Image (cartoon, rainbow, N blue to C red; front, side, top):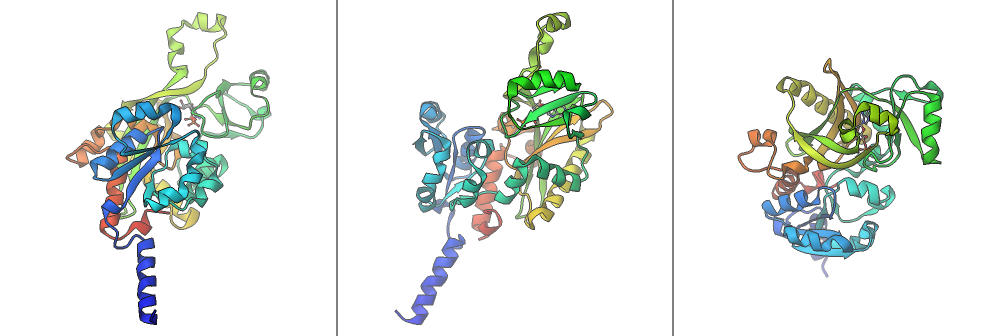
Length: 357
Ligand code: ADP
């Protein structure tokens, strides 16, 4: 083979690896069938992509009925995603991460995946580490609930949270060392943090930051429906005490919400600061969908107690778009669809290296 021909083939190979010259039909959108996958797959189909759902054996049947996956790959456990890596890469799939990726896959395994991945994996590392997350939010100058270093420091209402995104399962409230000691006994050996419990209304703000245009969009808001805390009010206070009911925060679902319009400028500014601050973390920063989890007090102070650096299940009520996306788009625009649109644009503009990190 002549040198010229060799270098021409090598050049072509490198361009293809970067995605240059590939068309939308060369890509397939893939995700784990749980959390927000129905929305992601539907959005991808609406934007003209082929789709793959990686499905647990016992849920294949129901996922089929929604008709959003062109192909279903059945697994016994989501951790098998790592063994599917080669197959997905050969299909030129694009993985869309969501909450189940963080819950079911180890971070180092996620980092090693060779399949195209929408988003910045480095930033997910910051999300899963509560300490790092706090540093990031401090850089963004958002108000955060206090952290108490030891149970002896407990003062006022405190929420005890366990590590790992477990949907609030087992979290409990406490107010003193004695009360804490009694309640923690059932959670022997688990790692926890003690966080100031802010009395107010929880509001989850959904954003999308485009690395192609540099723009930040508000996608919507939700509130969560949690067991048993959201139904404690159905039992009279006297009976709550008699029955020794303790609150728990197991997430069961999400409900749509619109916020007071006058809160929007501050919410948007917080989103912008969080994106700006993320750039100092790894030089690239956060892009795509993310969520600021807040509690708003009666004097309208917004405390951010957590950030999710990927799509959240709170966007699921908006498969047909939210009141906010309705303002900007003249078509139903879910967060899942917004992701697919970003990928589509990046392919058209030969800029996939900006969105697959
Ligand atoms: P997960 O870590 O599983 O996402 P969350 O951190 O969202 O769980 O918390 C579960 C529940 O506890 C939610 O209802 C949330 O509103 C509430 N919550 C969490 N932190 C605080 C806090 N500091 N003050 C008041 N409520 C809180």
